[in-house]
Each structure stands twice: as C-alpha cells, then as structure tokens.
Amino acid sequence: MTMTPAPLVDLKGVGKHFGAVRALNEVDLSCQAGECLGLIGHNGAGKSTLMHILAGTLRADCGVLLMGGEDVRHGYSVQVARQHGIRCVFQELSLCPNLTVAENTRLMCPGLRGFGWRRKAGALIVASLDSIFPGHGINPADVVADLPIGQRQMVEIARAFTCVDEHLALVILDEPTSSLDARVAEQLLGYVRRYVESGGCVVLISHILGEMLATCDRIAVMSDGCVVDVRAARAFTHATLVESMGTVTRSQGEHYEFVSKRGSAQPVVNQRPARQQNGQTVAAWPGEIVGLAGLAGQGQSQLLVQLLRERIASGKRVALVAGDRQTDGVFSLWSIAENITISSLAALKRGALIDPQAEQAMAAEWQARMGIRTPDMNQPILSLSGGNQQKALFARALGSDSDLILMDDPMRGVDVGTKREVYAIIKEEAARGRTFIWYTTELEELDHCDHIYVFRSGQAVADVPRNELSEAQILRSSFQEEVA
Image 1 (tube, rainbow, N blue to C red):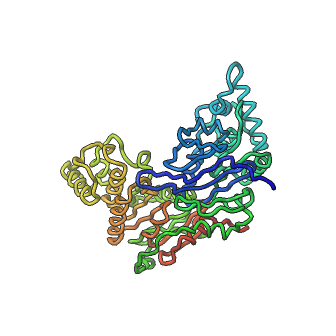
Image 2 (cartoon, rainbow, N blue to C red; image 1 turned 180 degrees about the vertical axis):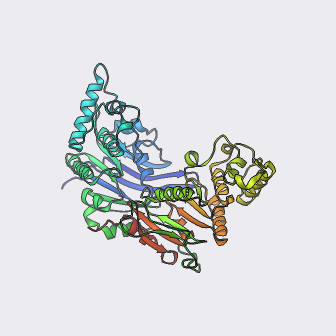
Image 3 (spheres, rainbow, N blue to C red; image 1 turned 60 degrees about the vertical axis):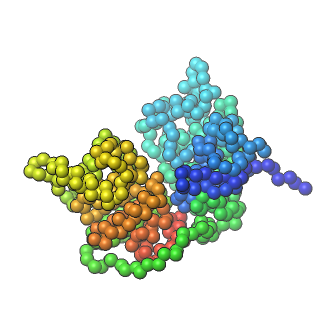
C-alpha cells in the first residue's frame, strides 16, 4: 500500500475579517510538493487574502496553518514563511525602482554579502532569468525604473526563484503573466512545469483559463471567501470552471420593473474603447446608470480616463469620483468644504471673487444630503473617516453642474451603511436626468445599473441590459477566451 505524502502546507478552517467584511470563511486548502495548484475566482473571492496569509504578510484570525505537521499560525511572519521555503510574487510588484536589477536581487538574498556581492548577485539573477526567460535581454546593471513593465515582472519572478543558502519549496505566482506577451508567458509556464516536476510546488493565480487548465495539476475555485470546489485540472473544462465560480450567487430577491432609457434621445456617451478591435462602443443615455464589469485591470479605468480627457478637451461638463481617494481624490491640505466646492467655483463667484457665504452654504447643503459626519466642515478633509471622505468626493461630483459622472470603483473600503446611502442618492440624481458610468469590482453593485458592459483585455466583450443580468453571464464573459 502506497502512503500519500503529507502536504507541504495544510490550511484548515482559516478565516480573516477586515472590520465587518469577511474576506475568508473557514478555508481548507493543501499544497503538495511536486504539483502546480491553480487558484481561481472572481474579484473579491479571497484569493489574494489567502495567499497573503500563506506568505506571512497577513495573519489569519482563526484556523490552523500546518507546515511539516506543525501549526505555525501563531507568530507566523514573512521571515517564518521564508524559513519554510515560501516565496511570493504579488500582482503589485515590489521591486525598488531606483535600484539596479542586481541590487534588487540582494534585497531578497541576505546571503549575498562581502566583497564582490554585486557581481555575485548579477550572476545569480541572470542565471535565473536565462532558465525561465531565454533571450530576456536584461542586464543586472539596469536600473529597474528604466525597464518596461514586462521586464520588471520578469525580474520579480526570476528573483523569487533565486536562492542563496536557503531552500525553496513553494512559490506563489499572483497573475504572473498579466504584463507578459504570449511568447514570454509560454516560457514562464513551461518553467513552472519543469520546476514542479523536479519536486517544487507552485500556487498559480490567473484569470486566463487556458493557462490554468494547461499548467495546473489541481485547481481550487474560490467564491465569496470560501473554497467551493477543488478538482484535478483535467476534470475541469472552460465551461465547468466558469460554472463552478458561480456556485455561490448573489441574492436575486429584489424585483424591479426594468424600463430601458435607450432610444429616448441622443446618447450622452458613445465611446469606443482605445483597444477595441471591433465596432463595439460603450454608450450611455440621459438618466442612465451604466456599469463597467469584468476582472480588475481589464481596461475599465482606462476608458473612464479616456472619456474624462476627451470631454475636458472638448469643453463638455464631466466629473469623476476616484476610487483611490488618497492618490486621485482628496486635496489633503484643504478643508472638507474646500474639497467639496472645488468643482463648482464658477457658480460661487460674486464678481471676480469667490463668495465665502455661498461656499459655506453649498458645503452645508451637501453635508446634510450626503450625511457627512463632522461637527465642522472647515476641519481638514483627513479628519474624516475613509467612508466620509468618499462621501465628500461624491458631494464634489454631484454638487457640480456636470451632466456626466464617472465613477472609478468608488466604493472600495466603504462600509455597507455608507454604500446604501450613496446608492440611493445616485438613483435620485439619475432620475433627474444625470448620467453615470460606474466601474465596479463588486458584482452586487451591478444590480444598481441599467446597462452593463463586461471588459476583457481592454475591450468591451459583452453588452448586457439590466433585465438580462446574471452572475453566470458576467463570469463567462470575464473569463472566456477569444476563439482564434
């Protein structure tokens, strides 16, 4: 009788909450030496949170993390993960842009020290690059900031497979081919197969179904913080994999009478995405809420930026509610009132100057309407909680005279109560004739839209009216690959 080897890593009942948000719910998952384990699911399914826990950058709230039969959850960290041979290449690259390729290699290989360490680091990373990406054209003396994004991703991946006086057991690759062309992606996946056949383990996260089915030995499907299906990769097809991702579905309990606003006038927007290869456009009519769906980073934000620039250049009115409020939203040194009124200064003039009373009146009106919780609107914007800062950004856009409001995943990190308040105001404003184009990574938010466009690889690939909306259709369109 053959004994099944113990798992390299065994997660049992792992849970993680961020405030009231449950990111992981009693997840069970094991990783075996000599296998490539695929991890797949829609946005927010919990994939990256689970891998952050495995990599030691997040700590689980509950459950067991077994390595070599020992529970290491308490006190687990990046250092402990590395001691067990675990490396991770996250989707957000971690290279220092002002350092060279060799210097970035040294940061992850503390065993490189003493005289001539740059030469040793350069030789190691080039050897790793040569093994994974033959013909890569990268020099260890290159400054990372000078490399295109594809080559940066190649360096990040090669660095994860580079070791000095350490053993390597498991490498997590989170969307590793997102910035690689087809030839380079094929080189990487070929190397993954060679690595696992030599006894290593890889956890591969990808939204490209063909990569998963061709490269993985097993595939685990996640939905709403749970592992809902684990099978041998050969037991899946494209269709059954997409179907499995939709196992946990949204509530369809709300009944509504759908009335299309299309054809009642000329569209406010009829825009062809920059990378669109056919004649499909994204259209929006007066009073319509149009949703942009699909996996993150598939061109939705780029379309919003494209629309914003073109309308500003042509003198048309437009407002944007940014999702990354700290980078693209708030003016951090200004007051709450100033952040709200900045887009409406022309309407607040008295002669050549801004009327302070009109400015305060506008801020007070939108404080009341949006329910911004503060005793003084002249306090700095950063004195507000994150949810109230986001309300101020909505107030800025809605308080302007723009007839088109663009929203770039604006509810990230916002609590459920705030979301409901804002949803109601968006619907009120749409009923008054304003048009919204709303990119969201949350499937539930599409229920608030009149029309949905699903994006994949920079293109709108599905055009769905609200009365035909289903989670299965969104998932199929998000993950289905182009047929040659």
